[in-house]
Image (cartoon, rainbow, N blue to C red; front, side):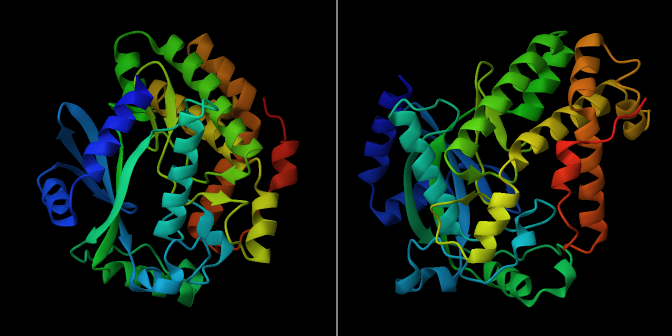
Amino acid sequence: MRVERHREAGRLLGELADDALAELVDGAVVLRSGIGGRTALLDLDGIKVFVKRIPLTDLERQPRHVGSTANLFGLPTFYQYGVGSTGFGAWRELATHVKTTGWVVDGVSEHFPLLHHWRVLPATPVAMPDFGDWDGDPAVRRRVAAISEATSSIVLFLEYLPWSLHEWLLIRFDAGDGERAVTLADRQLHAGTELLRERGIVHFDAHPGNVLTDGEQLYFSDFGLALDQEFERTPAEAAFQELHRDWDRYDVERYLVNWLCERLAPDVDRTEVIRSGGAGLPEFAAAVVRRYGPAVLVLNDFYGRLVAGPKTTPFPLEELKSPPRHG
């Protein structure tokens, strides 16, 4: 049913001329505008479609760069970390969605939203907020300025999923069904990140807002920071990806533990909750904290040092592999 609906949506969208498609997008219900682009929801003959506009800079629009997965702005590798990065380029995000959609259609995995269609359409430039100076790196400044001046966007027409993982967990906990929800999330977060790892992709931004769900299945989306071994990478990027090949697993564990601490013990220092092995939490949540907590403390500390600077703070891989035990 998913693939049939996907093909029908793709057919309907593909039949529209640019002007008609742009008018359809402009009339869609706006959902939000964020660091990775603007999103909306439209109804296509009864098929709900999630629309994402990704700014396409003048540099990326140059004929020799159309479709390029190269690091066109010469961005530093530490810009991969999800602490205010605007991503490495629209073509990389598109390429990842095309690939993961192929996996779903071919029966490799169900863990990704289907990309029904995409198109380059005119866009109104949007001023970007201040994301910090990223250690004063000039390539980052050029990238942010180029996005602010972009007059085109790649518009992704994606399968609609009703909730982010964050939203769904809130709903299930409010309904008294937190244990089942956490069990599902824990299992499927690991299944999805392991598949990406096996296929040579690091997501780098799989937080609970970028993982979607229909209540039965998790879907990894928002590939603005994704790095694929099949991209046109620099040697530095290839080495960085190899060093971070297990990043997604550690990161989803961090998000899950932190989410549980903030939901179930909002007035207690998160670090202390983790160090104590989840003392005071329901046993199902405490078990998750005990299982992943030592590595989560290491990664939380790393994130804190990244935010404070410098962005070149070394990735503590060996400490993650053998984290200190507390309690």
